Image 1: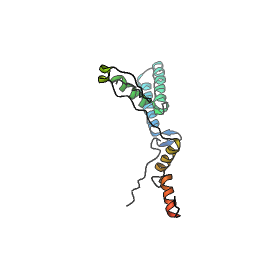
Image 2: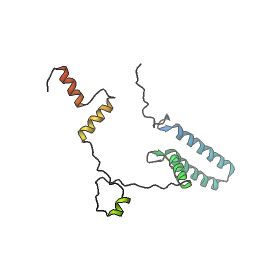
Image 3: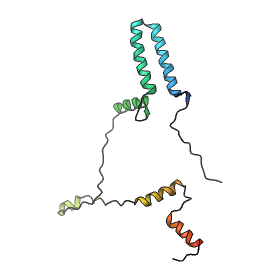
Image 4: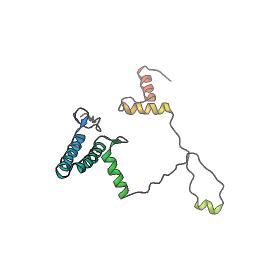
Length: 157
């Protein structure tokens, strides 16, 4: 049995129904047109103009305006949710270099262990790891490839 799965791509693209208009944008425009029609039937002309302009501006923002790549209604819902239930965000700074200080006996008992310096992989190793991941493990890496070549061509090291 083959363990390969089809991974859907471009899942953030919405279906287009007419030119660049998506289903979501079309429905929002229809609802806006319905509100404009209702305000036309229920109010006099000057009030209808003000209501119509307000509804058109709201529909344009909700349907077509994007904030950080997300639709405006998602942004508005996130703002409302943040105002309703804010959370405290604390940035925790990680120290890369080890800091050593002279401490007296009392401070040593309550002192926190120093942060160890992080070791970073060289860019050559990172590109090799990304190639292994991109090929799904078909490419085994340079060391493994050298071993296979040495065995195949009977080369002694």
